[in-house]
Each structure stands twice: as structure tokens, then as C-alpha cells.
Length: 329
Image (cartoon, rainbow, N blue to C red; front, side, top):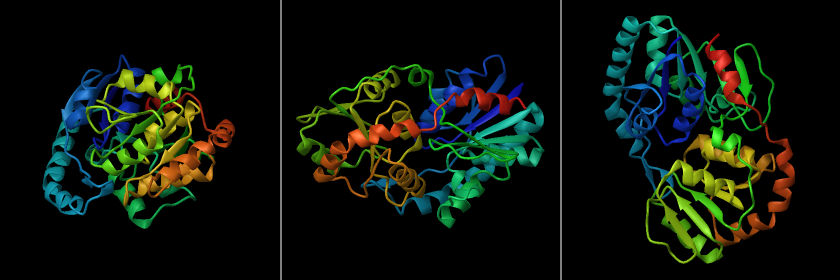
């Protein structure tokens, strides 16, 4: 098959699950559309094309108001990207377009009359009973215009319908095949590298903490900073006691799959993360905190035994196999 695979280039979660799917599509003729470090990361797995996209600006662990004017400035470039993808698809004639929250390839595919399979956990805020804020639903519709099939990844099992198919979260092989152990350290991941307040809190807990997402820095007491390395990150995740992160779906899902409770402080004003953290707490898999303090961490650690009991209800399975079947029609 000839497949165009559009990948959202905000953060690394979309890239990691795209990588897992791409590894099971070997033998197909695939072109990945992305930009920045996501394009660079996936260039080892497939041919790539640059495609423009939105960018969220973070400051002090919240979405900055600069995101709005920046989006407005980027809009002409995004329109140009849609036109370029439209012309490319007319020439190359792909059999299917897969979109992981990537808008340009979706719009181009619909203009060309090509089948679109859209993969996202955000869809559940738009097409299920558990609807998110109107703004989030509108964003989901704008970024995923009328796909032929919605594939919703979720760590909580729900009933599928004709064009809405629920699958477990997409896992990389190193996580799917892992044998988790319970070490003494907390794995900490931050989307924003400016959340210095959290570092102070971690120091005060006295717990060994390994931090990713804030760059390589000298260790500060009990807090060790590490640059992003997939192999090292997965090893630290498999062996950690629990996870502290924002509300990103990818890490949250991998942690729950491995039986690791999550303390989530979503990026403020980032509604998708807020809803992920809200569902996490409602299902008893971890704790949602608007602001992480020393007392919040201590309460989270005290509640770990109960969270681990609830892990039997996590939606697990081989999502990649099901998604590949859907892509191939």
C-alpha cells in the first residue's frame, strides 16, 4: 500500500506511537509528514516530508497567551502546507492517509477524496458521551476534518461503534514486552522546561527523582536531570516506583500499562491534559493536582497501594495490530 502518515509535531507522544505503528507497516510504501524533532525522529523509520503545523507556547507550566498570535502568524504557512500536500497527493495517489492529530494531511486527503484514518485520544472529547469543553471539541474537529474512521486510544475500555473504534493505548515494543520492577525512584517528565517550582518541591520530598524534559543539568540533591534518550527513559520508567508528569496521554498510558500510578499536574489551560488527568483520578489510577506541593506528593505516595489495586481495570492489549488492520481496510 501507499500510505501518507501525518504526525502532530507538538511534543514526542504522537511520534512515539507513530513509530510503533510504522514498525508494523514495513513493506508498505510510506511517507511521514511532520516537522521539527518529530520529523527527525521518524526519518529513521520512513521517508519524510516537511509539513507545517501549530505550536503551543508554554510559560511557567501553562499555555502562554503568545500561542494565539503565534497561531495567527503561522496560519498562512499552514494553508500553503495544505495546498502543497494536496498537489503532492494528486501526483503520488496514496491509498490511505493516516493522521495522528495532523491537520494539513487530513484536509489535503479530503480534497483529494482519499480515505482518512484518524488516530487520537482527543477524539473521545468530540464524539463520545464524555465530551470536553466546546473549545476542545472544535479544535478536534478543525484538526481532524471528517475522517472516515475515528480510532480512539484510551486506557479506559468503552464501546465501539461503526466509525468510532476504541483501542488500548499504542505502546512501543520495549514497553509491551517489559517486565516492570518497583524501584525507589520517581520518574518525572515535564513538557515545559520552565517549571522550576516543581524541582524545589521534589528536593523537599527527599525521594530519589529522575527528571526528563528539562534538559541535562547538574544534579540537585536528590534530583537527577537526564537528556531525552528513548532507551534510558524506558529503562527508568520500567523500574520506577511511580510517575510524576503533566497530563500527556502517551506517558500516562505507558505508566498505567506497567502498573505505575501517576501524579498528574496538567499544563494549565491545556484542556486535553486536564481531561486526561481528570479521568486518571476518577478511575482510581492516580492523582490529579492543579499544583503539586510537598503535601500532595506525600499523599500520593501514601495512596500508592490502592492505586496499584485499581490497575487491574486498565484497558490493555495490542492496539497496533488492530490499527494496522484498520489502515489496510
